[in-house]
Length: 346
Image (tube, rainbow, N blue to C red):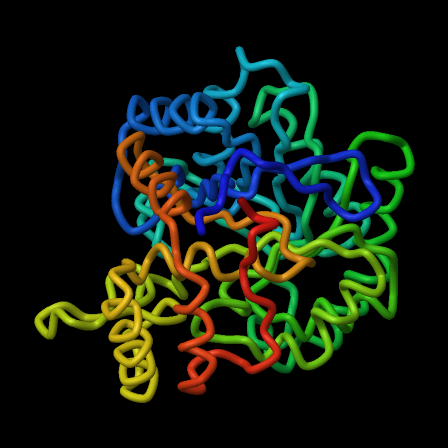
């Protein structure tokens, strides 16, 4: 069985339809290493040419660099042919000079500052429109709200976000300036918490429903199904370990933006062994697995070059036998109730 990445799924109750394979543009902000403007342009052009219509960026990615590059690459593309998302919750403030920070090797002389207030979200949206140089943004996500990110400050910031930031996002949606709103986070718990305070169309959830992790099946994903809230799945490789595997003992495997702990390495090793038995690359299984869940409409790995776009497209199209998934379940390497990719994804 292979997944056709050009087949589109609808986001919630909106009219937006996104390709099953999307383009995560944190890489275009020079995440972990520098890429050229030309490589960024070619990556987006290649994505458009192979039928990818879903592009996600954020002010935080390269402190404006990713938004500028995405806008430059999409400016001559028919606006009705793509779905563009960016994020709110941080403002960029000028600093004396550019410096490498938060993993970004960016030449942009700005510092990111959290601001989940009503005014902060409105300003962030206006600034993104200017940086992108595009006439529309389809989806805005409140970026990196949550207890894991903010620790003991979370209750205070969450209150500001739901009373102020959400109000701004809801107004932008009701005025037709965006078509959908949600959260863009690394923790599903805060998404479920936010659903008690407002109406969201979708969540960009990074890494928390993957070939390695399915805790979100307990209550969050069933609730999304019930309330018709869509999931865009970022970080399908859990920061790299599901792309590189763990066979190379000389290379550090990364999980959740840090060197992987031993228990994660051992679990990935077992998953990789099953994939090898079926002749399926681990990265292909990791990319396709989340799309088996009906709430997941798109998977958006980071894509930094035309070559990476092409190889990721190949991974998405690779035929994976149903027996691989059932074997993983039998060996207790997948949640027993995890929905598996089916022929509906052909």
